[in-house]
Length: 471
Image (tube, rainbow, N blue to C red; front, side, top):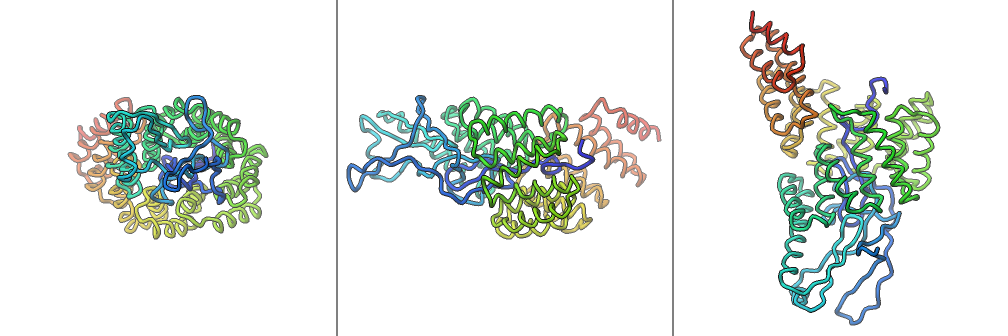
C-alpha cells in the first residue's frame, strides 16, 4: 500500500513504538519508545478549596456524576517517578498528588468519613469509607500501583506486570492498573495485549479522549496476521472520536494524520492534520517529523528537509528523540535516526524501544557486531518482547551464527502470539535453509519441523522438510 515503506512505527511493527502520551504529571500512557511531549504548559487545575486549617490539606476538581474527574483537553499524564518514562498518543491527567501515606494521615483511616484521592489515568476518583477492610483494600491497591510504576521506570517489566495485574485484581474498575498494563505492553511492542488493555480502558472511561488515542496508536502498528486495512480504518475512527472529545488535543490530530497516511491518503487532508497539530502545539517535534515524511512523499523535498530539521531541533527529551527517530526509519533514514537514538540511550540506557530501533538501524547498515550487543541488551530488558527476539534471531542468521539463531528463536516461542506465529515460522525456515546450504541435514530437518509446527499450512516449509528427509 505504501510502496514498501512502513509509514508508522517499528518493524513490527512499529510499533512501537511508540508510543506515546505526553506527560508531565501522573501515570503516563504509552509505549516504550516514548512520550508525546507536546506541551510545556502546566496541566489545568481545578480551583482548590480553602484550607480549613494550616495543617490539613484538601483539594477538589470537577467531577462527573459517576465520581470520576472530567478531563480537560490540555492536561497531560506521566509516570510520577520518571519524566522520561514512555507513553502513548494520549494527553490527559492531573498534577495533583496521590494519597498521602504518612503516619499522621494513616490515623485518619478509621474516621467515619474518609476521603482518598486516586489519580486514575486521566481522571480522579473519590472513595469514601470508614472500615479497616476498605482502608486495607485501598492501601494494597495503591502499593501495587506504586510498585508497578517504580518497576516500569526501572525497566523491570516482569515485576511491573505482576504489580499492575495484582492491582487490577484488587480493583478492576480503577483504570490506573489497566493503563499501567497497556503502557508496559506498548513499551515492549506487545501490541495485541496493549490493545486489549486499552479497550478495557475505553469501557471504563468512554468520555475521555485518552483511551481512544491509545487504541488508535496501537492500531497503527502493523501486527502480522491481521487485516491491516481494517485496523487502520478503526485507528482513524478512534482518532476522530478523540478529537470530538478533546478538540484542542494536538496529539489527536497528529494521530489522525498517521491513520490517514497508513490508509494511503497522502493528500492535503493528511498534511492538514499534521499542520493542525503544529498549530495547537508549535513545538510538537513528532508532528514536524510526520509532516516532513508526507511532504517528502509528495515530492516537496526542500519543505520536507526543513520540517525534519525542526523535528530534530525540538527533540530535547528521550521519548521525543525516539519517536522522531522511528519516523526517520520509516523513510529509510537509518543513519540520521542512529544519531538521535544514541543521544536518547545515553540518557536512558535501558529504553526498550530505543534499543530495538538502534539495533534495527545497525542491522540494516550491516554493523552486525554492535547490533548484536544492542539487541542482546534489548531482550534482557524486555524478556517478553517477541520482536526483539525475532530481530536478534534474524541478525544471527544473516551473520552465519545459526546455532545462536535457533536458540534465540526458540526463546521467542515462549512469547509469540498467534498472529506472529507465521512470522516466526519464516525465521525458522531461513535458519533451516542456511543449515541445508552447509549440508547439515539433521539440523535443517529439526528447524524445518519447528517451522511446520508454527505454520502447518505453509506448503513451502512442508516441501523443504520432505526434500531434506529424502536427501
